[in-house]
Amino acid sequence: MDQKLKIYNSLSRKKEIFSPINPPHVGLYVCGPTVYSDVHLGNVRSFLSFDIVFRYLKYIGYKVRYVRNITDVGHLVDDADSGEDKIAKKARLEALEPMEIVQKYANGFHEVMRIFNIQPPSIEPTATGHLIEQIEMVKRILKAGLAYEVDGSVYFDVRSYHEKHSYGELSGRNIDDLISNSRTLEGQDQKRDPLDFAIWKKAEKGHIMHWPSPWGEGFPGWHLECSAMSTKYLGSEFDIHGGGMDLKFPHHECEIAQNIGANGKSGPRIWMHGNMLTVLGRKMSKSEGNGFTPEQLITGNHQLLEQGYSPMTVRFFMLQGHYTSTLDFSNDALRAAEKGYKRLMDGVDTLQSLRASGESTVDIEALKSACFEAMNDDFNTPILISKLFDGIKTINLIKAGSEKISDSDLDKLKSLMSDFVFEVLGFRQEEKTSGENEITSNLVEVLINLRKSAKLKKDFTTADQIRDDLSKMGVTLKDSPEGTTFDIS
RNA sequence: GGUCGCGUGGCCGAGUGGCUAGGCAGAGGUCUGCAAAACCUCGUACAGCGGUUCGAAUCCGCUCGCGACCUCCA
Image (tube, rainbow, N blue to C red; front, side, top):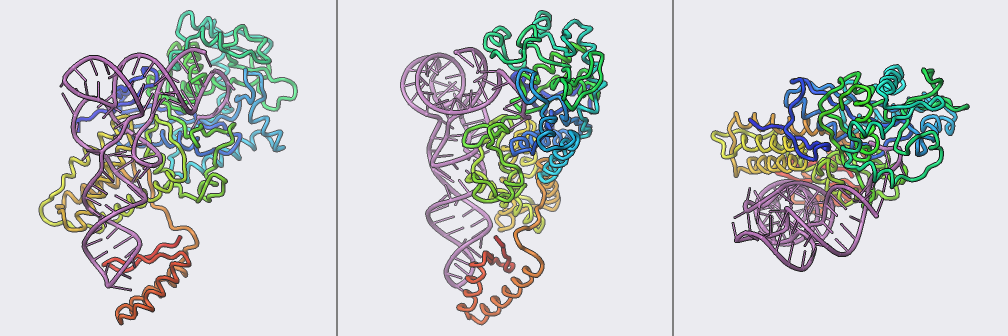
C-alpha cells in the first residue's frame, strides 16, 4: 500500500502530503476548552475531528505526542482585552473558588470525552500550570522589540511585527483592512494600535486570579498559553496544530506572531481547522445559546430535540460529514444516523458468524485499499463509512450465499472491519439502555417460547396476541430463521 | 462594509472536467401462517443565467440565496 496521507493545510490552502519533521514521531497540538461552562455538541465535534486524526496517525504507525490544553485563566469575557476573566467571573457568580470552577468543568469535559469515546491526549497541560513559561515568553517577545509595557500590562505590537513578518497570512487578512474595520471599543486606550493584543494583563483591584511578574501582579493573555505550551512540549517547530475554524482569527494568528516573536519560528507546519456544527443553519455557540449539552442530547431533554440519541449515534452522525464542512444538526439527520449506525453494527455482528467456503468471490484487498485511500485523503471519514457499508453489503451477500469467501479472506475482512470501525473511527458497542434488565429479558424470552409453541400448534390467534400485546408495550419481536429476538424501545 | 466559504435527488451528506459515493426515507422482491425484522434490487441530483471545452454538477464570469470570521466561542 503505497498511499500517502494528505492533509489540508489551512495556511497554504492546499492538501499537502504529510511528512513529519522527525518520523516516526508526530507532534500534534489542539486548542482545548476554556473550562468555565459545560461543553456543548459543537465543542464535541471539534475534539472528535482531532480524535480521528490522532487515532489514524497512530493506526498507520506514527508515534504521536498529542497535546491538548485546558484553558483555565486568561480568557477574557469582554472584548478588547479589557474584560473580566471568564473563569473569575463565573467563580463570582457561582460563589466558588476559581479553581473549583476549573475543576468542575474540566471534570465535566473529561466525562463528555469519555462518553463519546474520544481518547485522552498524551499531555493535557493547563495555562495556570505554565505561568513561568508564559512569563518567559513575554520577556522574549519584549526583548525582540515586538511588545511594549503600559502600566503593568504588556501588549504585542502588531504593527512592528508586520514590518518584518507578515501578520494575517493564516486567516487571509489584510492588516490595513483590519484597522479600518476594527470597532472602537472601550478600554483600548493603553494600546498603541487597536490590532495589538495583550500578552500580559495587569490585575486590577479585586481581580481574583493573579500572579507576580516582572510587570507586577497580573495574568497571561489568552493567546499566549498555546504558544508557550506547544513550544514547551513539541518544540518551536512541530507538525500539526488544530482547532476550530472560529479560532483561526485572531487566536491562531496571534499564536503565530508570538511564536515568531519569541522563538523566531512560526510553530506548526500544518494548520488544521475543523468546521462548525450548525443548528438550523446557524453556528452552535455558547453565546447564541443554541447549544445542547451532551446530556440533553442523550436524554432528548431539550426543546429542539424530538428524542434522545445515543453517543455512538451522534459520533456516527458527525463522522458522516467531513471535518472541513459545516454540519447541520437536525432530528431527521440524527434519526437517519441512528438507523445507519445500527445497520453498520449489525453487519459487524453478522461478520463474526460468517463461514468460509473455498474460493473467494469477493475482493477484500480492494476494499482495504479503498478504506486507506479514503482516510489518506485528508481523513475523509464519510467516504470511509461508505466503503465500510460496501463491506457490510459483502458480508450480507456472503451470509445469504450469493458470494463466497475463503478462510484467509475472512480473517482479513474481520480485522479490516474491526480496525476501521473500532480503532480508527472509534465506535464502540453500546450496552442496551431503556429499561431493559435481566428480569425483563427473561420474561420476554418466556413469552417468545410460549408464542413458539403456539405457532407449532398452528394456534396463530394466541401467537399473534402475544406479539401484539408486546408490541403495545414497546417490545418488538423479530423473527428470523435462527429464532426470535427482540428490541425494547 | 472587508475577507473567506457554501448552495447536490424527499432528507442528511461525499465527490469534483468524461468513471454507481454512502446513509435515511420511498418503490419492488426474497423470507414468513400473516406481519414485522432482516436481506437483495432500484432511483439518475448537482441554485439560476452566460462562457471555455469534444465533453461541466465539477473550470471562468455574472445573478440570487445562505453562512462563518472581522468581538468571546471548537
